[in-house]
Length: 487
Image 1: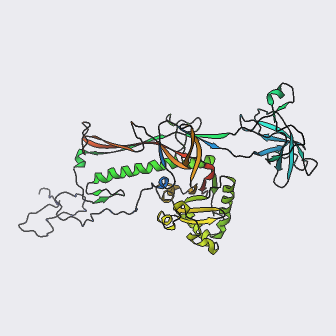
Image 2 (image 1 turned 30 degrees about the horizontal axis):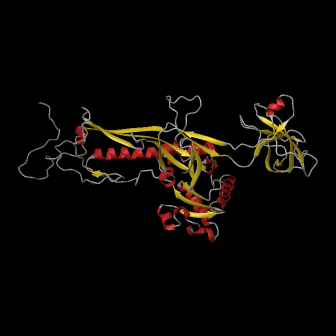
Image 3 (image 1 turned 180 degrees about the horizontal axis):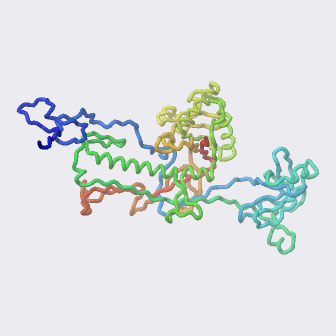
């Protein structure tokens, strides 16, 4: 007897009837065109993650401006008053003051100062300023006569823990005017002094744009194929052509990268090799370098009013910086709830969103709420808080959960623009992108190949390319606060 083939096959019938031998199982692994009955199909794709895009943060708080150079440079003013931390009380009458590299001593003979070690504070008058010792460390020594006590014996021996600041000056009748030490004369052997003024100084910062690229490709055959599933994306693209969804999502992902790169970018460290590239300074890097860090907000505090002590510590730090009246809080979900509990635990004057002035939004509460912000006032500051999706999304910072939020000052700052040669007003946070009359690189896209209306090459495919060149300017970073989690 020969072999028996038990493989199910189609048996023709004269009428359209359902029999065990005239259709194949859809789950038997063959899935051939012999399948007579198709499964019930939901045509629309299920949007199980909601709106997946993350962009929009920079549009809320900043601006985008073109530039034509490989580098953007700006200058920020330094503090107006003279003060030093980390001083050493060298003797009963001498204070050693640390100086920055290349800086001279701004304290002059005749000026009056406050000297503090924390528990002990006294006041005195500078009678002599020594020549600068190049070091390291670079220092100068002040000779001080005190007002209330005989000398600084109560502070003598304090190493690198004393603080001083200048609060004025005092001179006798007929005395010569303000003088500063002339190191060049002193080095010649003469303890002479000459009149000089304190020259204002500034701090210069710079950043370089990075070039971002991406592309999508679909072959000519796939581009002419109609799929079964109706697709739709966040930018309104819809239809039964699957490649439209893929191209649209590539564009959306790239636009998210434009913002994420401005938040996360890092400059190359000294001695680091990153394929010869320099990197760029993003928001988080700028705040970590020049701003304020607060670890574990409300972490050790009880829910509600227990977090108020943490928040007041932040206010005290803001007082020491620019004291910008209006600030925006972009928070993770957990930290936003901590703020809600904190505000709810306050007295009735603070419990409602109407307690704050909505000057940032033309003083309209509805406008603020439409943007997703709720406001409150504490001390002399107004705060507008909202959830930041980037910190909650499970495929971005919600995955690492190490950043709890960021406080960003509202308004503008006045800086000296090296390229324009004049003072300019800019938002504290803004993006600069490369552009000229010949080429605008803010967000470029182009199609190559021989499919989809492009006839630029013999490639039997459509390639959609994306490119941008940009960097972020974080001006006045000392007014920003980064909330970090260490648990």
